[in-house]
Image (cartoon, rainbow, N blue to C red; front, top):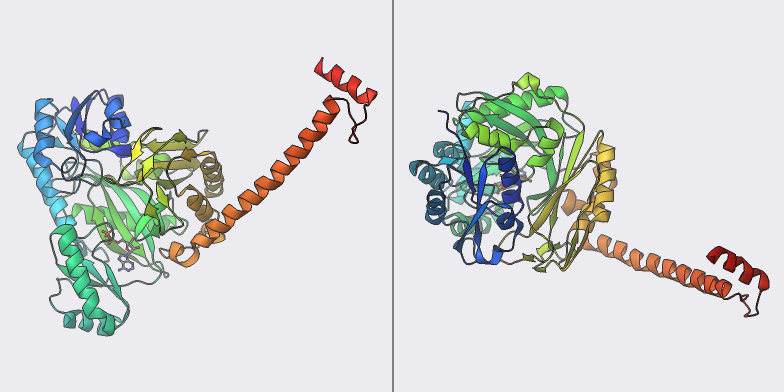
Length: 504
Ligand code: ADP
């Protein structure tokens, strides 16, 4: 069914709200922002055509307020709501409420969000569609003896996982039978408090896998394509920080095979709009479905850079009922894109968030450098939301060039007021293993220690001290020369004359 979107409400904040409204504006769509009181000075509020305050501060009283957001959409005559990522983006109930209110939800139908949001249900659907899944129990476990029976068959380590999980929560690695009981209890209770759902199931814990995901697009008429992979193995606490496309390990044959699996997996849930199929790849290059994210992904820009396709515009076109404008064979990949997520955090202290006001902010620029940012100088990184400052993306013909460009861009990034992971990102992308492309999801755990950054920091003051001494010495000599004195203090006519000439 075709419907026009003339006005779009963006139910989000930060960089993704800005990202979405930019594409909407380019399509001639009027944009509406919602914001919390603490966010009133943020760029997404300033850049939108209209903005409405929806509450004080916490996510629960603002960006998670389903009724309030729908009320604003109706009051402002918005035809559609884009949920961004996080907050209500994967909330099936919200998607249904939006559609029931006669508003277009820019995302998949509630049924697809529901079946893919439940990891146990998703595994069943995808397996039935013929896509390989990580070995695991097909049902929730109610007792540790079931987990122990699984481990007897597949050997330790195993992974306890929350069925309704996300963001690395409710996951516990179990290395032996002695750890099982307490891991089960804590996974269950974390799942209950984070998702209101204490169901836990078991997966084989794959040793040293790579996290590789596929971007898919599906229209309302059963057509679906994939836009290639993103390599997302560089993670801390199971959360991605550096992503790239293409992945060094994916051959054209593997891309074709995994891409076809991704399309099958998406269609198994009746998926519509943009989505991501995540896979784990083991050292033998076997791949296994991990989960589907039923929304736009944080790292979507790397796909945009190498395909030249604006994913938000595609989302809006699909939501308006247009058929996909591209066929699989028309998708071309060009060059290499790398993304660093710039966080306000203390890399030397277990990546803990660093809150405060950004007192200075100068972003890197230049050919092939893109920054998606949702905060400006003077804005605050508060305790209320995710401390991401921006996403820095570089694009170049080759991977090496993209790394060099990123290194240069990170050096140019000038930010004060909060601590950031800028130096850590630079350290990672210049690590020999990263440069070789020889890494997996354990890279940070294996190679990164705070001491490494501290050592680098120590070298900087030393280098600065040497440079300062040089400058001082040079200035002294120059001053002596300008004054026409020799180093011993006596007047030199020759020097006086020379400098007079130069100054004249
Ligand atoms: P969440 O939904 O909480 O983000 P995922 O299922 O997407 O959880 O997994 C997040 C990360 O955890 C993966 O990228 C990977 O690093 C690790 N992981 C998840 N499942 C496994 C597994 N079976 N074996 C090894 N690592 C895993």
